[in-house]
Length: 381
Image 1 (cartoon, rainbow, N blue to C red):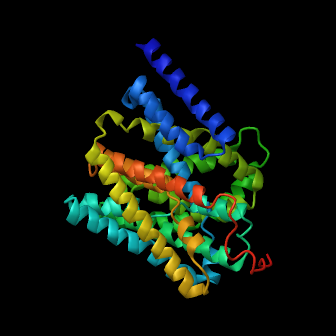
Image 2: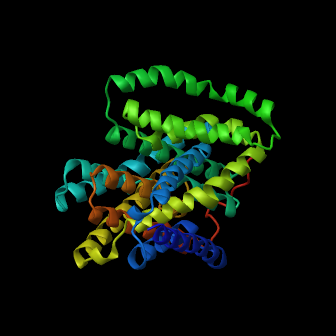
Image 3: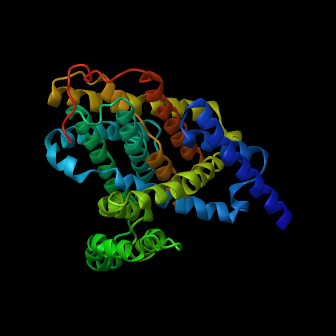
């Protein structure tokens, strides 16, 4: 038995490294290739339930991803551009949510919870990919680029709130958790500064251990005591701790190294292993195409129209940019599958739409500068 587990673990490790190599060579998202690698591993070699260690690392990778995405939320930028950012963000999330929910509930006749979860998972925007695209085009420091970055933060925060409301089991435990833990979380940056000053340069990397243990402990306590999903808590912790970590570049780089080189690949590969392509049918593919058209079309309109209204500029690039979907959609699908809200068919639909829509902006925006770059000067830092 141990030999079989070791062989399966070796196969998983080889595919995880291979996906990273191919992503570098072909300049595509490593997450997409890791999902595809997981599909191949599950189809030809081993099922995910045979590797408990991979399931554990995948759950930890989900927390790490949400923690790192929380870093991307720039509260100061939101405060400076709140009117346009909030307006664009609300419409960019609400319009595809309504469309996907109506398609799920009225056309495909899914139950209420499954329809709601699909509408959240397929309507968000990948905050990390939007920031990365804005950096690559040199638009992040322009007024329009900063508003788009802040609007993407609004979309992500509202989507996390929606997920918390859907997945939360509100009760006395929730109230006690919020009353006791929220003030403690708000005080963490001050305590974290003392930890970093005290143990900076130590070979035991105590400050890094502190963040990882804090993330795991808070997530587990929230889910088991308060009925709040651990991904929501990890995201909130990332926002609270972002300023502290960014002040210490070495610590941030170490944390990113652990999350993006090891934990996140385990999460994406495990997500792909949950997808059984043997169960694919024309009906399933047709459903995925319908959701793709509705989600991407309404996301484009929900971003481009308010962008044009608030900034008096073409919103075509913004509409394409906000169609980036990745981590949050996959996390929503994984959570829904684990708790039984989604079946394997709906899980497959979400993954197909997420993977397809993640490639869509990359194709249309390749080597294409943002439309406002030629007329707008960068803002001073």
